[in-house]
Image (cartoon, rainbow, N blue to C red; front, side, top):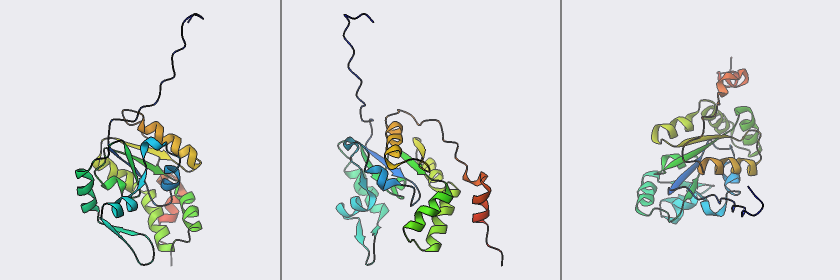
Amino acid sequence: MSSSEPIPAPRRARPPPFGWVALTGSPGVGKSVAARFLPSRYRAVEVSSLALSLGCGHRLARHGVEVDVALLSRRMRASPPPTPRVVVGHLAHLLPVDRAVVLRCHPRELLRRLGKRSAPAARRRENVASEAIDLIVSEARARLSLVDEVDTTRRTPRGSAREVVRCLESPRPRAPAEIDWLADPWVTEYLLPSRP
């Protein structure tokens, strides 16, 4: 390029041509915290907040929100978002979304993260097992053709958000992540029933 030619303006990333996108994964993988670092054009909203705003959920006495997934799905179909909107939560891939990004985390690290939350032992074990056997990825792939995975094990929330944006700005799923937690002996040992 000669010095007299204008320098082309940098290409701005355009939001992808779809409405609802799921940012999903097992509890503890970092969905909510990564969503805070997404660019504002993606308008991230938690499943529970969306359900409450659309009259499809109610607050539980202790904590959390009980979501009527079928009713929420019907209301989302009736009012598609005006711009791409990321719905965040472990149920998000079960909603009428066009694409899903599944956050993943090594089960040992996930167990550590869940321990910091003081989650009951049975719930921690259930969530770690779900992650180890790729449950949410399998559910998402059974419903959607556009599914990406992002391993958050060694990423900061900001780094995870950057990877999510790269996925969303690609017109097709990126190469499948080679995530096989069951190949790790620690994971298979953890999942085996404890001996008496």
